Length: 343
Ligand code: CP3
Image (tube, rainbow, N blue to C red; front, side, top):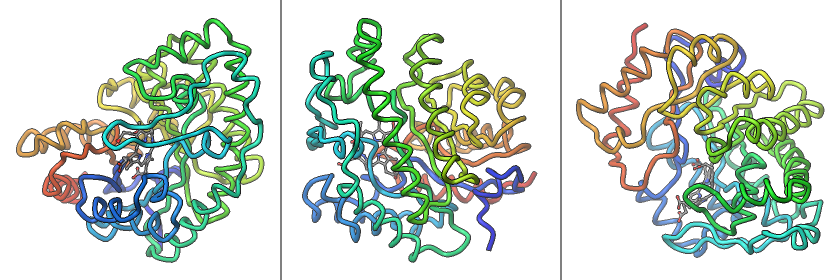
């Protein structure tokens, strides 16, 4: 059977766009919350293949999405690099800050991939549990976004600690980026070998950078990852998500060479159609808050995405992850409306 998501990434527009959601396995689902409580810590959930595979499949069983995304986190790479990574309930990630050139000099260049073997095992399990029309997506964080958490030791409103460090000590900062580029290539190739059909690179914090810094810290490392993965896996299909990149999206596409660009809800439609969708697949871009709102406002927001982009290659998605307070009925309303789309 054909996987519609791969068709779109291979240049073949679908009459009805494939649909999945970022963070589709998560706290808005009671079956996720149940297994999350049983697993203990968030990392135990990620690193127990039976559990990780199960939560990956939960939204597929419930909603029949066209793609599953392996349940893990972008911070498993710092973890495999030997950094301490914890997820505090209700507070998000906590790492030991890597915020001086002296500390950065001690960073290991090579990750311990035995620590990530459970992710590969979970991918193999999910693959066995999926039908032949549902694509399996592997992922990593873009080096810039992962580095922002490694430097600050946590999420911050604008990732200022990493931005300041990158201005003051670009060579030291580059050392973090280089380690992330090399290990992300190995990690993504491992995910493809374990059964992933396509890959997504999450650059959640791309939008806080001015153009010169964006080129250096977001585009260039992503370009190196795409080239490095393709060297080993020539046909690899890759989606980039430089959240908030706005008018810099065409440059991102041109220089990274990804097959798909995930866009957030602030994107300007004619720029996207003319300078991004003309050359690649577009993924997105429903506002997750419209999904919380529901009703007519949700229908209108869905129709806007379809009217703007379904004339070309579109993978229907949100502009960022689904939020925990989202009603399940609204997700069902969205899927029904997208699947009923008539060009
Ligand atoms: O999309 C999926 O369903 C796959 C799983 C996935 C998770 N994180 C699970 C998760 C993916 C693709 C990610 C990526 C990720 N992780 C990003 C990039 C995308 C984005 O959302 O911006 C970032 C920045 C992270 C780092 C991270 N992990 C943060 C900031 C947090 C805390 C915020 C939160 O939502 O709690 C996490 C925790 C996390 N990762 C959860 C999930 C389901 C929630 C943890 C829980 O269940 O308690």
